[in-house]
Amino acid sequence: MQLYKDQSLRIHNSLTGKKEIFKPINEGHVGMYVCGPTVYSNVHLGNCRTFMSFDMIFRYFKHLGFKVRYVRNITDAGHLENDADEGEDKIAKKAKLEQIEPMEVVQRYTVDFHNTLQQFNLLPPSIEPTATGHIIEQIEIIKEILEKGLAYVANGSVYFDVVKFNENHDYGKLSGRKLEDMITNTRELTAQSEKKNPQDFALWKKAEPQHIMRWPSPWGDGFPGWHLECTAMSTKYLGETFDIHGGGMDLKFPHHECEIAQAEASTGKSPVNYWMHANMLTLNGRKMSKSTDNNIYPAEIFSGDNHILSKPYTPSVVRFFMMQAHYTSILDLSDEALQASEKGYNRLMDALDNIDTLKTGETSDFNVQAWKQKCYDAMNDDFNTPILIAQLFEGVKHINLIKENKETITQEDKDVLTSTLNAFIFDVLGIENQSLTKDDSNTLGGVVELLIDIRNEARANKDFATSDKIRDQLIVLGIQLKDGKEGTTFSVN
Ligand code: AMP
Ligand code: ZN
Image (cartoon, rainbow, N blue to C red; front, top):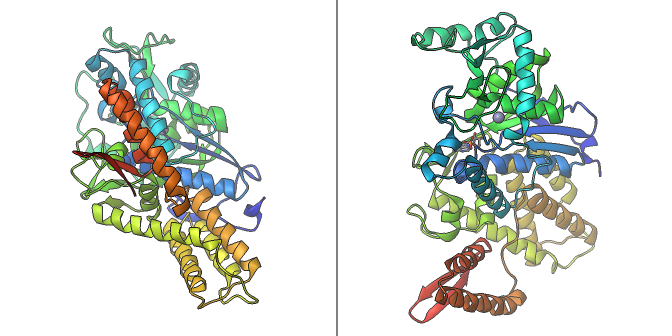
């Protein structure tokens, strides 16, 4: 299927601020790089929103028939506190705090990241490279930038010379900043700083004796600067210039600005044709963040164990809630919004359950082909999922009218309606049907009772890992266990 030949997709390019027709570098292929998580703590729902947005984009490209190479990295070294050039490595700091190896921290939170994204039904990327697995590539890029005279060595560290780079390039073009303004607005360097200018950023940092995450380099033992890993891994797997680079809006500056500078300095080429930025998820009107307490974790939503929401919500409902907003809009999480999404989700799933039983007739009162094209038009307009969902509900409206014998549909149109709904809901939006039909309920009841028995045995044996696992996994499937005086009962969302 090569649907993309009939559909022209427009993407909002953060670099130009315009919606542009998507023209891939290689016909029928897409190369996409998205900045992954720094694995020093559990992913919060805000992180999940960004990865879900790019999962939807990945899925739509695949649906259109493109061959996509989707690279999403794991940051397991080099990301210092406050995204700065000084301070402790976030992972090393956590390792010290917990008295474990940095790689134990990395392992623990990478597993959590994968589990969480799987619960939200995200597809795995094609390649998931790590910063520590690409130290040699990063050192090679530093050598090239030094050779071009756009970096300098200071006391075992290497810094990118932003002022020199800006003489022939435009540092600030992605984030809409001017270097002169940045210079006017920053205080003087402190006497002990090794940098020539405050805007310079680290490509390589000398490791002090107490710094545990360190590698040998031509400049002594140290570790790479945070921005460098993404330049190394994106160009290694996608080429010196590739189609799409994505990430959260907060990464535009300095992270992505520095990525552009590093790539242009080392190869002389612009690295990315389309820069895409997903907007933030807020909680109570404020940005969700790992470093402040303003956040909620997916497990707390699925279990209902939080002070923010009145009840638990399934991963599918949360995903549907996310998809109801455009990826470039800010989205605020609230109980009312999730309740409204749950109602909408149930209406959609009910319609899908009913579609098979619809009677067909000689004519259709509903122009299914025109409706189908409107679904594509929505997605082709910079992945406009809220408009797509409005169209899906237009389909639901007709399903209900046909069911009530107020409209008719031909078999052929019914087939198109069914396949289009399935394609957009399941394949493109990545929503799963976690509602149950009546026939399923008896079998399900038996299975849940069996799991309740196993859980009670586990609890009696103080095997809380097993009992918690049963409870948590059932929650993910939309089944809530309630422990009471009379024993354990369950409800299905
Ligand atoms: P981090 O692990 O902090 O590097 O973040 C991983 C990804 O999550 C990055 O692309 C961030 O831009 C994104 N992100 C962080 N906070 C939020 C938020 N509140 N809403 C949406 N995306 C976020
Ligand atoms: Zn990155």
